[in-house]
Length: 329
Image (cartoon, rainbow, N blue to C red):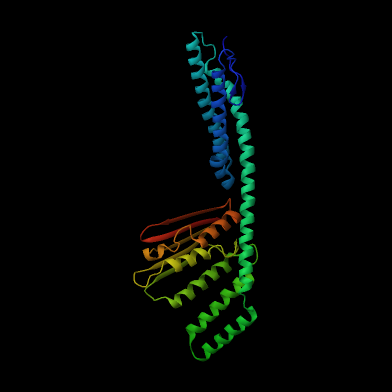
């Protein structure tokens, strides 16, 4: 009997009535190849599209998967079919192109299944991440409430210290208290909105840097620059400060030369944020990498709030640690 390719998926029921073992072989590797296609597409190839939402990437990976698995499965089908007929000393009627036509339809169906599974799995993962972030936010809010000092009482104390410093002609202390008051007011009252004016976020970072300078020796090189139009831009509050805090926490050494360079550049509708600081080996163990809790949390916030419109790269060696973040405003 001359076999003709026919079937659904990898289940090639090739009329091998004389040899059930060969028929089982067709079914087995067809199922394995189909399972590999669905799994690798849904868990490896599709997630970058779900993150960046680029149509050309989606079309490209679908085309490559169909072409690749059609070629691979058709090759297996052809070789097994050819070996079977050589063993039976019969003429081979099914050409390689016959298998390609069959597998093109079959693998197109399985690509549809892979997309349905991949999009569904991605949606559940996103919901899980969102719930996790909400739980972490709730825990942080509860922790803050437990340690909360009455803000009005605190501001009254700061205003009193500010006036006392001026009376004693201690201008640096007065200026530091004023900046601390502005910083805390922003944290308590102005950072609760989904987005805030970029100018306020920049002012908050500047106040934080100025307060840090008060405790550091002048030998530490600290630069902060802002370029571009920031007046009409909005940003998620407190999304940049973690990188600044990380630089001051892990990039300063009293025994070795240290530097912190921070820049914010607004290019049309993109914000380019860069932090470069010295990298001291003694501090590395405490989290100078994306495994640190603060950096992991800000990465989760970026994924949730700017998932399709940001790019974050972190580079480090024995001498420096550098963060480059681009956000579409």
